[in-house]
Image 1 (tube, rainbow, N blue to C red):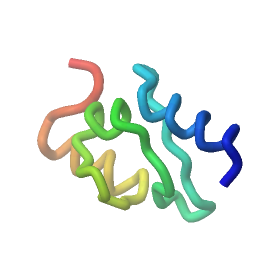
Image 2: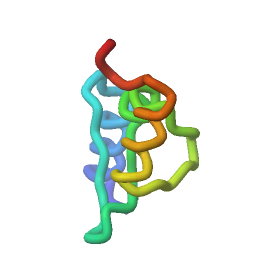
Image 3: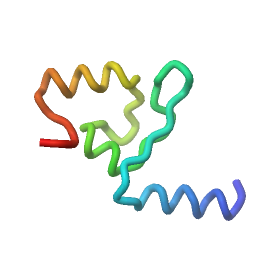
Image 4: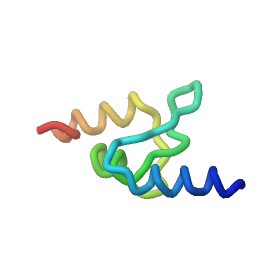
Length: 65
């Protein structure tokens, strides 16, 4: 991994903005801590968008209250 990519990953990890990358099937490949906090995801949890939305809806929680 180049130094530039390492700095980018570090910066994204510290950002207040919610950032996530998905594969074509909708499975999370990467989500920064802000995104994980907002959507109640564990540090290593990989879940698809639909399941994440359904789970949070069922628990009546999400990034906006």
